[in-house]
Length: 261
Length: 320
Ligand SMILES: Cc1cc2nc3c(=O)[nH]c(=O)nc-3n(C[C@H](O)[C@H](O)[C@H](O)COP(=O)(O)OP(=O)(O)OC[C@H]3O[C@@H](n4cnc5c(N)ncnc54)[C@H](O)[C@@H]3O)c2cc1C
Ligand SMILES: Cc1cc2nc3c(=O)[nH]c(=O)nc-3n(C[C@H](O)[C@H](O)[C@H](O)COP(=O)(O)OP(=O)(O)OC[C@H]3O[C@@H](n4cnc5c(N)ncnc54)[C@H](O)[C@@H]3O)c2cc1C
Image: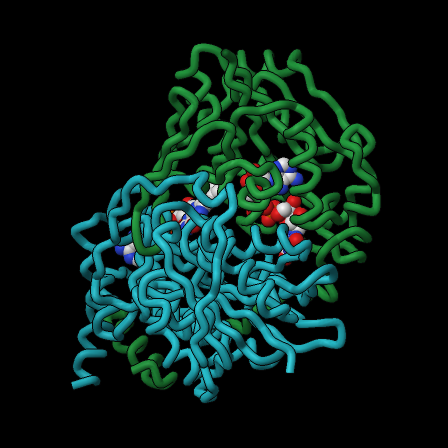
């Protein structure tokens, strides 16, 4: 029996670029290059490893995002995923986490799945809550923040390294898994992979394909509202000294002046 | 007065500091009603009352430890149904965020995560967030449903504000999803005796420049002289020099201490994402061009193997 894996991947503005907000206080996606959120590469990697272990598996990568978000899908396909779904609709502009999760849940149900894999957090908003929300919406076990994951005989097991303890988790499929950057280095696409990705199918769905109304998503439909976004003032230049043998003592003097000692 | 639900983070009845900070913020919006779950829940009441909780709802059941997250969501939802609060506040730990998020879905509300401040507004609580590696500050609201907001540690002062803190048992019925993810084993993290990284007033971090696990004692000695927590960059963690639980940054812990001291850390954007909101930032780095120097209040261009031990010695001498 085939194992159907859906991997959610996000297209995000490059963190090393000059990220900022547009006039409507949504993220300006035109000014900064986008890419597949680096933390989602770990999700694709784990999907590939799980598929390798299974007799028969199919990996679908799914994104909700604008036209350019296809780049994120192509990257995932070139790593080795089998097919892709791109949910794109002008009415999605400004969707918050509740709306995004609604769209993803509808798309995942339509695609059919045994296992959903996500990253631990996006590298832009970095909320880190979408996986739990998705599990709640889909009504399947959440097996989140795994640094190790295994799927065998319809059961997913994994290790979650929390603040106070490391836990071993277990759930039956269908289930939702999120993986951390400790789960294992993601592979680079090979030349062959990049060429093969060009021929792999990318399905395009819009809101009507998912029986969703415009009012349920987008800026107007959002559950949250951003009232202001201000650039943090540049730090006033600090004092920088070169160590000429007294650097540690000078630093102690500074800390004492600030009442830290 | 309107009630605000505050989810309590505690270890066997010992309430962690971020929860007391939440009580300070909750009082700006309404009357705090605390929800404490698991072993020792009732023992939290005294300190919660001391910091403003008018009521403490408690529940304990094996489900809270035997299964992941969802049983706690069921309990928080029971508290929500019992109280009808104007807002729900939860500490921004990994688990706290997941609990808050699932509750928000169930009650049809929006969620804001990692708030660094909270104030009352005409249209409900207004949350401050530090986004894009803290290069922007946003003010946001939940516009649908009852605001569910998770708050980062060190976002508010802990203030005494004695209140009744009457303990009430919370009746919880676990739903079908509660037993979905079984916790088959748990290995507690060994205590180092140092403050909790996210809560500490001072954090001392080491990076690739520390050049080996055997050298990390230099960082630890400085931390101990200041009563600080120890942090590490991902480069140091990936090299196996320090545990991942001490990593500061985007995929590690986000810290906001009064003082952050970075040694042998270049200041990559993903590291900055986890420490840029620190009040005072100090760096020791032998490369004058390292980006970390753009952030510092005080920087020493020099070899950490010289500068840090000298600093530690000087602090010890001054403290007598
Ligand atoms: C700076 C900033 C702050 C924001 N603050 C809030 C807020 O407080 N409340 C709110 O409701 N919304 C907020 N948003 C919007 C929210 O980030 C988006 O709606 C987003 O799609 C979901 O959140 P996330 O990316 O943080 O997800 P996370 O929970 O961090 O992402 C985890 C995983 O979910 C998957 N995923 C996330 N988005 C997609 C996608 N579009 N397509 C496919 N997979 C995806 C990926 O696998 C990812 O690794 C904010 C956005 C920005 C840029
Ligand atoms: C998706 C993603 C997530 C990430 N998450 C994190 C994260 O959570 N946290 C994190 O830290 N990084 C994270 N990173 C990695 C990050 O990009 C950097 O690689 C990392 O922060 C570098 O660590 P470093 O500063 O210790 O090492 P380097 O960048 O190599 O810097 C070492 C510094 O030490 C200095 N130095 C060397 N020797 C000495 C000496 N004897 N005395 C004084 N100074 C010396 C050097 O001049 C240099 O500036 C992430 C990356 C990605 C892609």
